[in-house]
Amino acid sequence: MKATTAAISATFQKVFGSRPDLEKRLAQPASPADFENALAEATGVLEALAGSGSISIDGALISALRAARFDHQNGSIRIGNTTISAPLLHTGGIGKGQTVIEGNTELRSKGTGIKVGKGAGIIIKGNAGIKQT
Image (tube, rainbow, N blue to C red; front, side, top):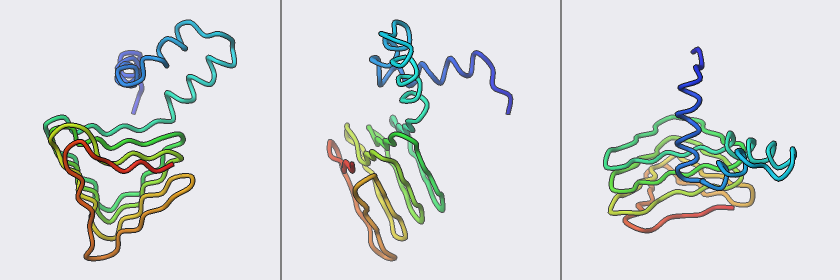
């Protein structure tokens, strides 16, 4: 896949929508180190936002460098047969939606781990979530 300036800009605009502080730090860094740290934060974060639609993840191995957030909003997220790892991991969301974590799934953060065995599940509805650090 060939990355274009427009595609890169669109990606960063999505990040800046949820993290306006990063946009400010990249536009007006306090130092070269501040710019490098903000860029690392912006590129190491995975966000999956369902809006009013749905996201289904099955049989995946997902790893984020800094953080991962799965927000059902007013839609739905289904995760099954998957391993997700990130130093900071948010699962659940805001709005009227629902997240379902099905069996054979593991959610790992820097200091925690949740294993959902075969036949088991976790359902998160509405303004609720699991934050793992």
